[in-house]
Image 1 (cartoon, rainbow, N blue to C red):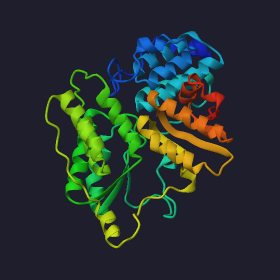
Image 2: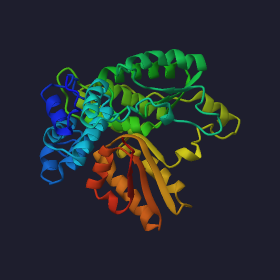
Image 3: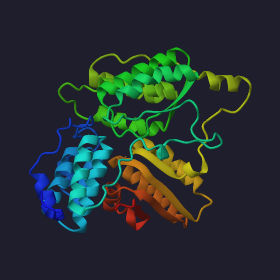
Image 4: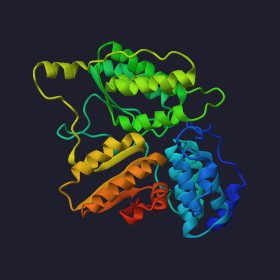
Length: 383
């Protein structure tokens, strides 16, 4: 082995000769006609710088095409843009929860620049959903996170015992950028069993999970993956949230997509909320701490509109609005106009808008939408 450290371009070229670890395709297959999201041809008809194009492709659900474009950039570019491409590749792989691939490219980053690669942030307790006035996480808070092997199954398997031990559970899946059909089915079964036992169940940041599931069920089916598990989890989630009208719409879509009768609606009453209501008390909701009122996490999608409205409401007395985006793994294409509308609304009210902690991938995406004209975009620090 040579003692001389390879240059960025030579290191990238040498690694390009070797293939990264084989990883199954993401659960959310590329969208196409009829899904309400742009196809690759539609996206490529708009000329963008390569790195912004990769960010837009990933946002629109074309992860394989985005990765291929970044790989091409790593083979052919050098300098600052080349370093950004490495960081964007790591952002993309973290968003897809592909830890083995992430580690492979992180080694390439170290070889190329002689610097420590950005850390893998999934499962970081600093990004947990913490609640004010309770000294940290509530005792029944349960974060669904993958293990070191990137597997979610063990966390799902342990959920029922945890919930029964505490008598209630606050499930948080806001850090999951995707869910396999198998894991979705297992989680749906676990939640349904707990619900039918009469346990109190909350789902923290449900808009993020709904966004992941909607993307999965709207994607074209692939061999061996019919999204039956995704559908079951989406319907179970709507029952837990008490969203009967949304359940009815989803049931019709399920019947058309799967050509079978959907499961019937089941009323669910959270026993803790019912007890408070019987005593005439207020609902014991998990109030967000002041630090959480202007932060976003997980996957931003069209279902994140309530979260953006919350930010607009909380920002009312402020002259400078700093929105923490460090916990956002992926911004769905459909969420970009919503973020743009929020920034425009706040700027129109005379406020300075700052989106902080952006990953390189998300920053490139928002720049392609022109969000840097109405808000200051601050990226995460990297070595």
